[in-house]
Length: 249
Image (cartoon, rainbow, N blue to C red; front, side, top):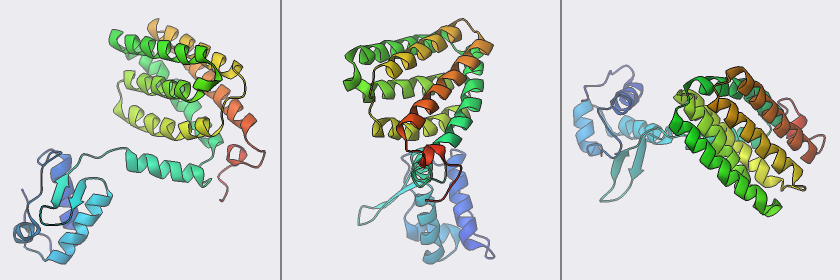
């Protein structure tokens, strides 16, 4: 699986070889890498560059390294958590504003919803209707159910991205909504009207998806995103992140 490293760029070559074996499936999630002494022999290198390469792969989320007698390097598939955490940090430190996220969402989610209207399967529509029932239940519970209502709203957006049949859309929008959720949670609902309007938006979007009305669902999704931005702007002071354009912390 592995070959002697290039002596001109030992560290980069070690990372590239192990990363390649994971991403092309030769190493699968749950597989344990050979012991370091065996890897040193395979690569014909020394322990220093190997340990550094393993640390980098751990930081990338491709390895889970445990120390001790029974330790070792276990293969992981790349996950969204590190990227989502990075986006969350950027938002919290005002490197990406809520206004910028809203602008991004209005364009991207409108198009994704239009694609989903053309590709959604009956199973996708059934899932969305099931989520709508959950949203309605929380809406009827009132303001006390604000957070679970928002969580279902989040799941509906991600389910629509999944119905579009493009994993890049699904990955990116899941990441975005995981971070937007923090702002809903930070600003409890003060009146039920926004929850009711949000629920009606979602119903209209799912109905248009089921009817394969791509143009209508794009417009509905964009309007829904604008409603979110108006709500968040109403909850934030005028000099807060929602009104800034890429300012400093």
